[in-house]
Image (cartoon, rainbow, N blue to C red; front, side):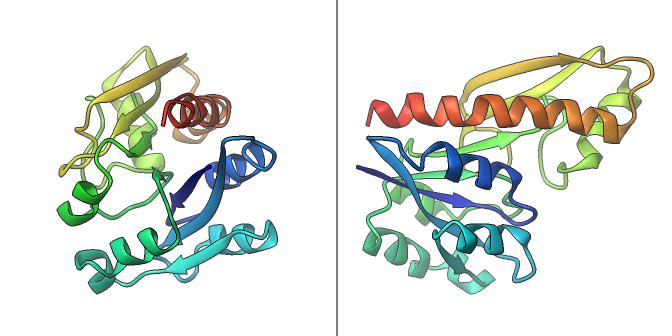
Length: 188
């Protein structure tokens, strides 16, 4: 069994979608949700679906404590789904090629520190892009610069706002993230 941890800092829409997708999966399951935000709605969503949660503070993220907690829980794969902190090298090294992130733009455009939520979508609109989408990539030491696994596109219309674009991109996230996670974990 592949035990998956989902890291999230906010609402947890993608985390909940993953939890539900993997509830009856024969080879993988979401067994842990990790957040750095004590007010994140993702924590309640995880608990209501009987998934264990961990709230981490900055010091735990920087040291080896989190790696030890993940290994103790036999976590073998990590999905960042709206996690707004840069992972330390110790965590990346402990899970080589086993940490992925979903980003709400077609990387390498509109990625990097501070590029999350409607900021990304407003930047896409302001730049005059005709398409946007999601990028699922492996995590490395830099925000949104890891090896790209898959990208999925949607059109940007002249009437789109940051909010309408966010909804279009969210549809792609909900449809494709579970499928990509499943494809990768089936090979572990």
